[in-house]
Image (tube, rainbow, N blue to C red; front, side, top):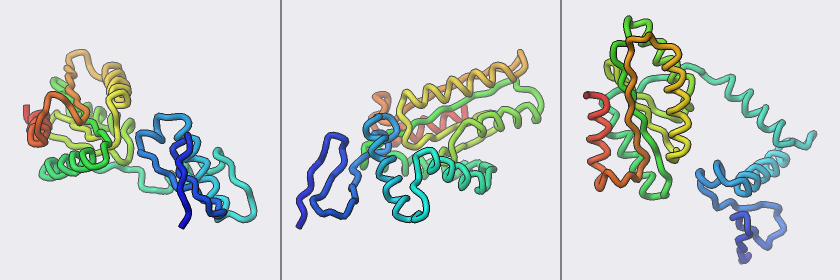
Length: 204
């Protein structure tokens, strides 16, 4: 049996000469820690080059391949149905508790936005700023975003970007308010309180 050694990049290296590193990293680590991110990308490049025999791929070339693949997928976003809200949040809470991976939510309240076309423009603006993995719930003039694997700092950046765009595009009479949270949140002692908070954001 090979003995495993954890190096200073957080990757297990085995004594077997098979050229394979076994990553022990979380999404938060590889998306926020430079050394972890580099080790993660190097591992992917190494595996990719085992599959592509006629060319040695670089990180930039691998990124272009990923972008090409994503561009071929369906670009339209779908809105989650309200009856799935509690189930979706329960899934996020369970994942966060089990793997210690945070998730965030942002709720926008839009009042006096004008005709339906203006509201549709607002929704399109929000759609353009969120990821394919993010979940969107709409109810009248309320918008709730569920952001998996998202820490508070990333949540704040996204909210500010969306808020600034809306401020420049909405009519002067429109009113934008928001509330947000990142789980775990000291305001909520139970998962049911998080569920109640999310429903209140859409209804009030």
